[in-house]
Image (cartoon, rainbow, N blue to C red; front, side, top):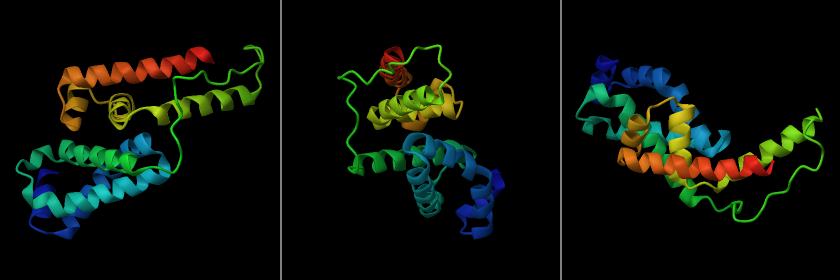
Length: 174
């Protein structure tokens, strides 16, 4: 793939298409994990457009994947900052608790739990979402997630811990 990166840096569109084919699904997974499927598709596409424009400036072609991941995460952050359509769920107030017994097999319990967890995830900051998705969704180590987010490993750990604490509150209520 390093050769494809070098060729794409020289403006060869076919080489860049190979890179999109190779990395498109994983970048879409990251963006969709952070933003949801619809906005994730848009962010991933914008990230590839940005990458095409900035590719000649990439100094280390062997670092293409982490560089592209960073662009995707930054596009997601930008999208979250601009998102004003729905108010975020506050985790400071208690969520509705399912009143049916825990032993029931009614699918609605799972739906309610999923809605609560989705709402809690929506309430996380962009950086908290990113570290959760990079670490658990993309399977990156905390060091790799920190590198992608351009923060210290300790910062990534604290953001992950804060995100998991907030999500645990929701799970405990359920």
